[in-house]
Image (tube, rainbow, N blue to C red; front, side, top):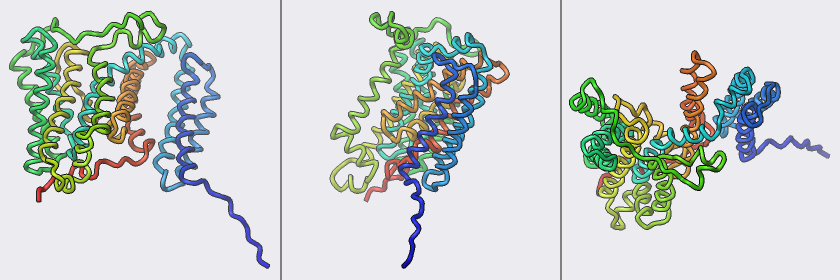
Length: 401
């Protein structure tokens, strides 16, 4: 007679995934406890939760299939501890001033708006099979020509049209090299970015010289919502939002509906997945890709128009400051889905708003706080969202047979 010893059951991969997300949630709670309206004034609960989150993350990391998720959850748990210590070392009054949530949300929408436009453009381009690294340059073209059009026509609307046209034309350059000449799409996009930096810089100096753009240019107006304005929190957060912010938010469901609920969207996705098969059934692969890349440039340029005509009211050298690349990260974060990309853009926007407000606590650590949005984006893209599968033909030149 043989005795069998039952081995302890190991957590299944699905359980590890849930544990990883739970650890990330514990890390967030560890910091939230020290913020309004809870405002716990001792760091002990946050330290306990942060260490627990780190421990669970280490356990999850022992599963090879969820190693990145576990490592990121553990990292968030460890990051939450110094953040909680920083909050409890401040007076409750200072913390309430910085974390006025209605102001944080309003500022977060401001930072997120150009990313929404850029991410939607990136999704459309990549769903057709073309990687658009040139979103940064197309956004920069929108910045300059948006402000230039508003200056010469004395209306922001003409500036928006001119900016979108400039972004679309630059996208056509990228499309020609990537689709027609079958060049490496990353190299072509990088060249487009450099071209935009040089071209806008030259035109800016030639048109405005050292004096810069005039200070009284027409800007995109804010939309005042009289019903919401007097409602607590919502009035300050959404009652005076820029028109282009609402346009960007409304475009998210429109693009989703186009991609996943229309025949044209199905054809676009088919070309991005299996262009040879799509061609055999009569779909025009190259023409569709040209249109998709051009539309992506128009969308990215509209984000640039918002930066110059809606937010700053002026133009500065390279004022996009890497937002086109963050929009690309939002595309990956959102798994090539408009609603997922919206969530990524809002994450970056809100973290950017917090980073600027956190400088109130310490001017010397201001630069470190400004790195918070980028760190959160890297953590999210690297591990928390799991593996993202791009369209099968994305980045692969199409050769007609």
